[in-house]
Length: 149
View 1 (cartoon, rainbow, N blue to C red):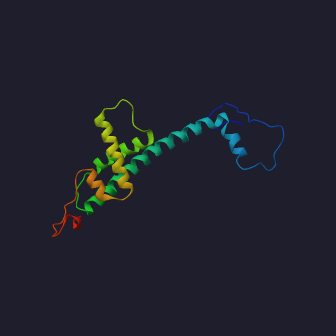
View 2 (cartoon, rainbow, N blue to C red):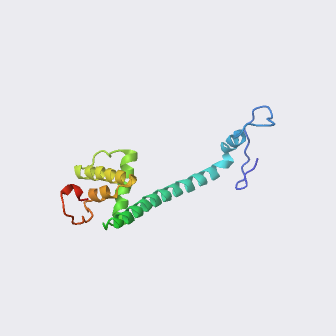
View 3 (cartoon, one colour):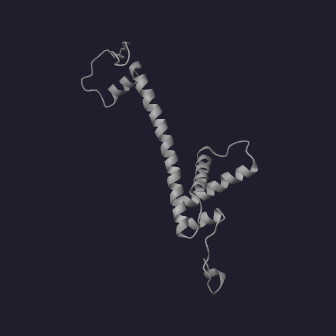
């Protein structure tokens, strides 16, 4: 068999008998191991890696945008890119664990990012505002502290 992009001639592995009705995926599995598919497999893998990183960034900024909008609804202004940094750190912390050899300050930032991310995923915007140290304005009420929000 000849590849359209090269002058190399490739041979397929043979089993010695002809399968008239092969099981699903047998032919594809045989073809994927051929040398003529290396170029296309590499190209597909590069595009997949590129799109995976783009979707990762879009997820981070989409989640940060939703959180910033939700915080605005409860009367807290917080920048979306700062929230995106917390989300990025939290995802890194949750997937890889705590990096070795980091300072105590950075360790605290990773832990705070993890708590903020958990609050975001639980749709607890008051907890997010509390963790970011920008609590919403509390309405003045008459009565004891238990009735205040």
